[in-house]
Length: 269
Image (cartoon, rainbow, N blue to C red; front, side, top):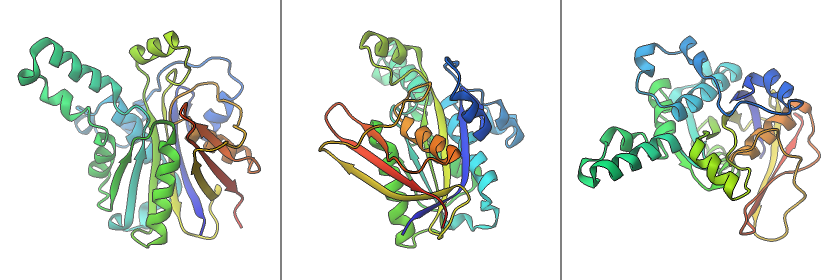
């Protein structure tokens, strides 16, 4: 079985959509944060009033993928949702830690806590979009995206769902950027969301995912870096490869401990 890619939702400092991402490949520097005001086209101000920036990134990416992938005719009970993230909602996590430091554990902000848990974005998408199929959040840093795709593969192979909406989301935060600068590590200097609408069909509008491998031995050669970096950057590398039609080289992510993942793409049959 292969994973057919029927829809694509892209959000980042480069803008929205495939054309903006393709243009960003030739840009030397990008803003740190993404503009998510396009959400007003899909949801009211009241609905978005308490939605954090991290959740807005995810919600916009998922909504764009649904709009692009033609999921309107699919039963919402038969759509699975998987969200991969390296850091999770860091802004609200730091807000919660600040409230604990200032007021103590007994008086720490319950609102900040409720929005700091890693599955808050997937839950927000499920509630606001009405999907009632299985919903999962994967948090394995740079391995998160490959792990999410493997889970989507299993759900479709087992006929648990008819479609899977799978996404990768990470957000920028100045504290992480400063920590990365001090450690000479570039993995937290950007943010964004990539969502795919997947099915088990023989062909997909954007192409196919033909293999997902994970291991701890010598990894295949990695692809060139993007103009911005984040733990879920492998998802953006996949989007770039799809848009450029470059299917020959596996898309590789590596961890300092030697863990790696490789995703292989192919054109539609």
